[in-house]
Image 1 (tube, rainbow, N blue to C red):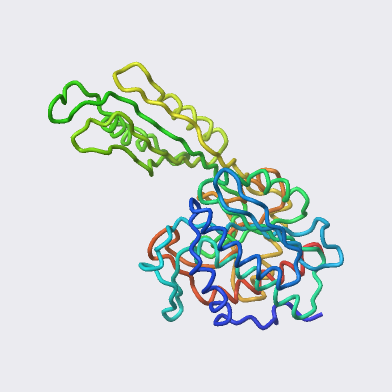
Image 2 (image 1 turned 180 degrees about the vertical axis):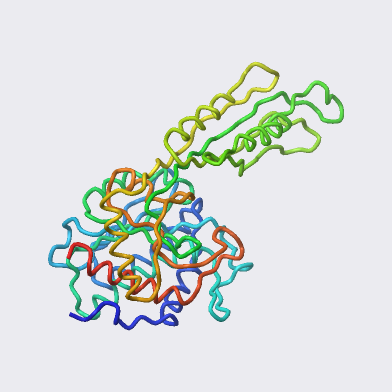
Length: 379
């Protein structure tokens, strides 16, 4: 059998293939845009001979794509490639952050998080099929539309699919040192609303009770609850329509990260304790979607890491493994105790910013890692 590390991976070829992916902008809250991205990837998977299913979106989000790759045991549990195709960048971001290469760096919205990793792991399957290399286990691909907002519409789909497989690969971007993730902290989201009393801001200011002012007081209180083990960040703040009106409603969203379940429970309790109807302005806090703690050092995951580290050394790099924040759909599969290797995608910086980019050299490096993992897991 051909050594998967010797397959003809080419960075320029991969960048050419990635260009239409990146230029098909797919922000989470624009279901039609996400579906255009799903059209692109559905076509590519079908062209590889995969049995492709389009799973309709729900809750206002886009569709998912599930593909069963060609294999004598196709449909049986094997390896699940799990990734998301939504990004945080709104349509039009390409004007400020166009897809472009500058030396060893390539820029583009969603290129690092996580279209680059998805493409690399799909290209590895493409090269294996072209070379006639049969993997020990069948491979299933699942691309979803809503990871950037906590996976509210596809968590059940992901968990049900993952339970059918022996190994889960999540090509989220690599950690800053290029390492993989073998555990993740919990992520909890909260929706906040203050409700006051409207009045004319110039004519009868004293009669009003500002929902904005009350929410603003809570920003410092909430972010001041941050500790090393549990962080709080108020990232969305919406209120007001007329400057000459005292605003009666203000909405906000808070993200909390906790390293342990105990710290998560404590943090949730502190947020919910902010509920109040005692004053002139009501504060209502409700809990949103939560990513559970994925405890590290699970035997199946550690065995996957050991294998990936061996492959990395053959390629010429050292792959570390540790727990991390940030949250991904790996939280769900890891929480279930399923062997999961996360953040094994491309290397880069600036995700979620207008400087998002990848290191071009990491494309071939990670494609070789992917091809070898497909060939050695379950062997």
